[in-house]
Amino acid sequence: MSKRRFPPPWTVDEANNACFDGGGCEPFGKEDVEVVGSIPCVASGHPRQYYASVLHALRGEPAIARLHAERCLTLSEEHGFRQWRGLSRAVRGICAAVLEPSGTIDQAIVGLDEYSGAGYQFGITALFMLLGEALLLRGQAEAVPEIIEQGLTKCRLNNEVFLEAEFYRLKARYVLLGNQSVDAQSLLEKAVAIARSQNASSLELRAARDLAWLWRSQGRLDDARGLLGPIYRSFTEGFDTPNLIDAKSLLEKLG
Image (tube, rainbow, N blue to C red):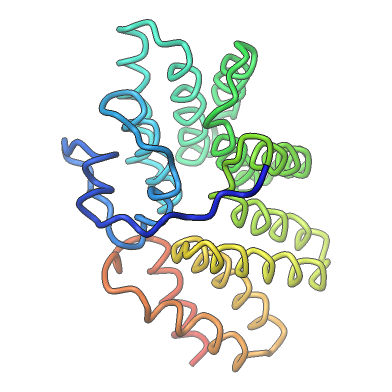
């Protein structure tokens, strides 16, 4: 099965109509529509809330992501939709683990097991990505390699390649824990290239930010500026989101 490329980017309005219903949560901006555009058309209700939770998590907004996951869970329990119940329970658990360092990742595992145990597969790729990142943030990296490989496998089997770049970025973060900077650079360069080939500016920014950080630690300031600067300047909105705030802060440190 060939890999699906991103379709033409959605407009901001189209992304918000697909995945956003207001209620105090911020709508998506242009930096998000490439990811939304890679997802099959989602209807109102459960799918919209689930993908909204994933996208807000990608934006670095776990509190908003958890709110959407809780809405999806409520709808799922009201209407008996087991598929969306497992997905939303997993995302809610992942967000809780990020927001509450003293908590556990158990809720996320329960949701993931419920979903996969029922024989469902579609949409599970994002769960592996979010779970891997949460474990890295919590310093529980032992299971991360297996989670990444499972996620990459699901990317290919389910033709859900819109998060492939993220898995290589996370893999690089993991290998950096063992001071394997050469391997990390190769993985991050691959992540940047994949995201760029998919016209996924948000994911390209995340990978480029990590690569620029690595090059800064090696004294390669010009290379870091040359990579991250043009990508950051290509954005026209969303500068209050964590991804762009982090990129701007790094560029200021690079001089």
